[in-house]
Image 1 (cartoon, rainbow, N blue to C red):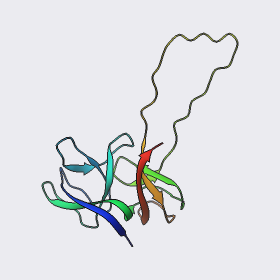
Image 2 (spheres, helix red, strand yellow; image 1 turned 90 degrees about the vertical axis):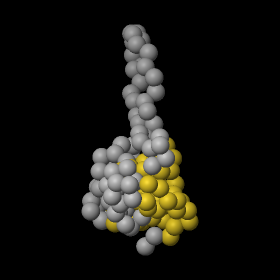
Image 3 (tube, rainbow, N blue to C red; image 1 turned 60 degrees about the vertical axis):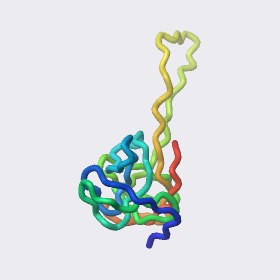
Image 4 (cartoon, helix red, strand yellow; image 1 turned 180 degrees about the horizontal axis):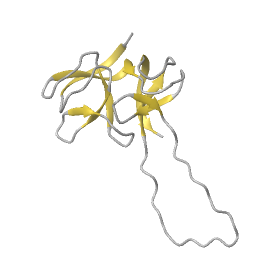
Length: 138
């Protein structure tokens, strides 16, 4: 059961299913988020939207979210390619500490992945779980 603290009304670009994670578009509309690097905005309420429909996005509080993987309570969540919540993973890398190491390229940092919040209940793909909406980065 959701417990919304802040919901804002937006116009949908494309179809958006109920309880899916949405992203902000440059023109002020929303669409289904499809990658952790998308600008995650919140969760579409429990009503599916068609292209051009207006609907509420839960931006703070507790939202019902469609799970896209096995999730444990307390896990940070991000989005899969279908707008469903999945566990977030931090970017890691390996340092080469060998004395003979020579750097031959300079690379920039990886793009940060966004999280939409924290799972309040565990579940599996296809479940509707409750998530404390707290957008951030991993």
